[in-house]
Length: 333
Ligand SMILES: NC(=O)c1ccc[n+]([C@@H]2O[C@H](COP(=O)([O-])OP(=O)(O)OC[C@H]3O[C@@H](n4cnc5c(N)ncnc54)[C@H](OP(=O)(O)O)[C@@H]3O)[C@@H](O)[C@H]2O)c1
Image (cartoon, rainbow, N blue to C red; front, side, top):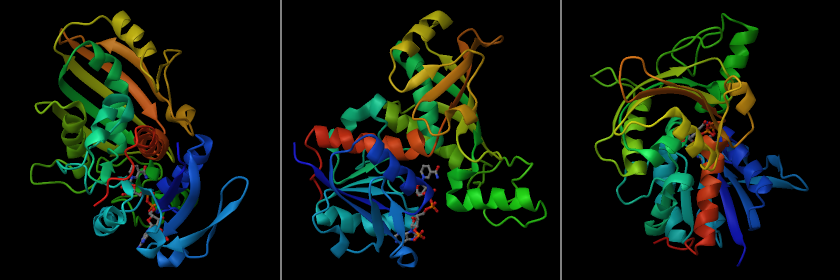
């Protein structure tokens, strides 16, 4: 099969840099790799292992001959650039939330709904990182029975807010009096129960993502999710405590067996996974699987993953691999 001309848009950011590494590690079939970012980064040199690459400014001209664009920029830029990328004929695999709820755009976790890539019209959206972690962690249970209710508390790393999130934690560890600029309160030696803006019902934008995106990924329009998203002073890797109620009763042993057959996850009960252990790995780790004492079909589990990898870069690269393997790259307008 023909190799692919690839561009990473947002190549200097937390997700973009991770994407470049993942593309190399997975030996993505690249003929060329363009590194695109803002005018401010033009000329920056990025290490590509055996060689280096120079950052260019995003432009229509820079998209010439590009087959596949991995996007790692914010929503406004993704919205502005998407029509240009589609018109160039390249497939746009986007990490922002701009298109995740667009009925014309598949929202994909390849281990769960890769086949949705088939109906793309030039854009495939990567789900929110906390949603990817929850859906992957629940995939053994979902293979056995539908989930009727889900209550999630997240423990989200500062790198979820990009390079500037990591810089802020580092600055405040050195100087605890340093004023917050990225997060609403100091994040060093603290936890903040707010990610995104609250609506009139007191639910944050991040909290809505898990229900809305989960419904699209699972094709379950009635999935009920209640979520509390919390930022914690961890550089990398999100963790979640998840409570679910299942339609049918399933034993813990059956779930453990199902987990062994699910790709991309590991059950770690010796004694449980931590974010540190998952750093720089593509595996979603689950543990502390146990029954709820109050609800007959209720279950609890704990899970962690490197949200810059499986929660963003790796998931996007897997989408690109699947599209390439199935001859689905060129479908822009
Ligand atoms: N961080 C995560 O864990 C995570 C997980 C899932 C999804 N996401 C999503 O992925 C996207 C990127 O997040 P991030 O955390 O990587 O952010 P980031 O570290 O702040 O990186 C932002 C990138 O956007 C580039 N950019 C800014 N203005 C630009 C312009 N005018 N033209 C082209 N590129 C421009 C920046 O380039 P310069 O360096 O030149 O400014 C940088 O490469 C966001 O939509 C985010 O919501 C993030």
